[in-house]
Image (cartoon, rainbow, N blue to C red; front, top):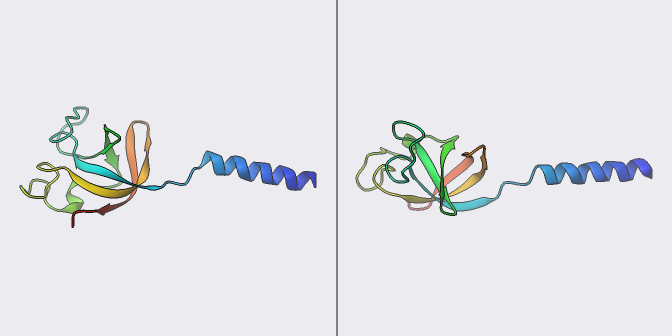
Length: 102
């Protein structure tokens, strides 16, 4: 019984240490052109979550079309997306992206 209790406790601790990443709706755009981020040069994908902007790891700005397209490019407009990911060390680590305006 003691071993069973110990195993249950360890499973609970592990579950709390690795929370499930939930889907959320965020704004995606060019970090430099639309969100005013200056820590990188060039055009890079960024997410704005709860009013704060983060560069994105795991997706590229050109994966969703021409970044400089005047109607839909991330350097020109801010778009909404449903994403799965988390902020780690000041960057948004994305696991999946589903654009909501397509």
